[in-house]
Image 1 (tube, one colour):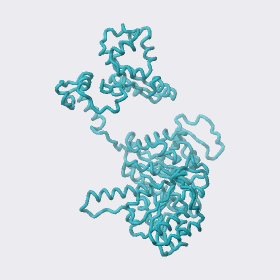
Image 2 (cartoon, rainbow, N blue to C red):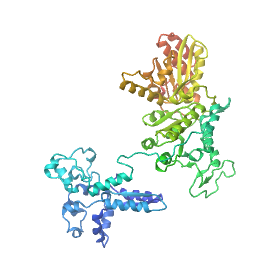
Image 3 (cartoon, one colour):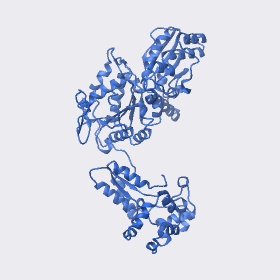
Image 4 (cartoon, one colour):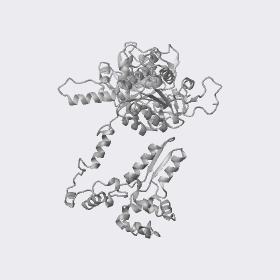
Length: 616
């Protein structure tokens, strides 16, 4: 903290300014008689004028220093106290009675949230071993003198000889302290904290809201973002889960095509709508109400994540299966509020994080602000976060339907990150037999259309899947037959590979388990080229489970503001670069002459000396 002020006063001002009830716990009971005797207010002024840096100095100095400096001009008020007693005057945060009183007052308060601001000192009780000192974080052990001082400070019944043996001390089982602790743990559900499911599980996931997305758009163009908005609208109207859905939007509901929901379910406002919105004359005007279902939080991803965690843990805290969908610009999710996403995971939160306008090259015109090429990599360390990058509406529908089943029917402690882009293209119908692959992260979307002299496997996710389909056609001109695979989740493939490796390592006498990626690509001949709108580290992580040469294409580097076509050319992830990468890999394997790859570079108008996008 800054030493030249009082942080507790700054925090009080901030919270009170926001309408909170603020309770300060600054001084312990030891100070009560001294304050009661402060008839002229001199002690209170001294307390108010002393800055935090000086208070820290008092924490490390002996009682004589405190008497000469803090009590300067008022020494007669503490003449009945020894230097040792002066040193032991407690701060409010170290006085159990004061802390208890503060919580009791907070629990009794009505009408606004309460914050308790308690003053404490780092390393309390360590004395010379680190109390109030800047070395507290580095303090690993105490010498015998410091241990004796700690014992004396807290009245621990151990002799000097016992102290030398560094014993672990606990009060006797029948002491009031232990009886109190056992009682509190029993009231809290047991000795080990756990997240308990207090809500009744859903009986089943209704199929109706997902049917339209399975059928495709019949040749009409639509973005995945629009497909998600239609799915959310149907979920909100469903009689089984509709009232459980909690849409959360930090800013741009209209950008995500969700304005129709303003009239359908409204925006929650505890006081209703106290104004006439400027778009009141339009069909889809901005409607707020006490019965609103959308949480429209304004420009605050952190505040929206707080709402997401509250809704996603309501199954345990309130006994209600609320299903939150937090929709945001994908660039402003894992990168901006990653700590809160980790907190959601640690809280066993459930729900769907939806990164709209996702990818590095899908949002034309606003490149540097919104282009996201790293969110899936940032999602990978979160243990119970399942991250998917679907390309088609039916993939999205399968993932969401199965996610609701896993979280709210089966009660699994997982949550989801889905990236959806705003590029419009025809959405096909769901192919037969694709469901398992969609959920496990990979399925063959389109086998090679023509037989060729050479073979290749093209893997792609999200917006770049269509570039792989175009590359499939281009490769036919070079006598290469390529299968196209839709990668719905690089992360799930990576986790599955490691899970199989671990099981095999611990069960050497059992038949080895085979990762889904290996099951799919093991029988598939030729080189493997993997492309996405995200950094190359995602597909790079899968190479160990492939039996063929893996070439990865991605969008490493800073974003650019340009058309989609120009961006994909710049980052080298379009159909032309997928084609060249495939031919170059075949050449390195000796399947084709290097001249074939060189000819393709010329045929497709690629500048071989263009700047490296990762370094530009």
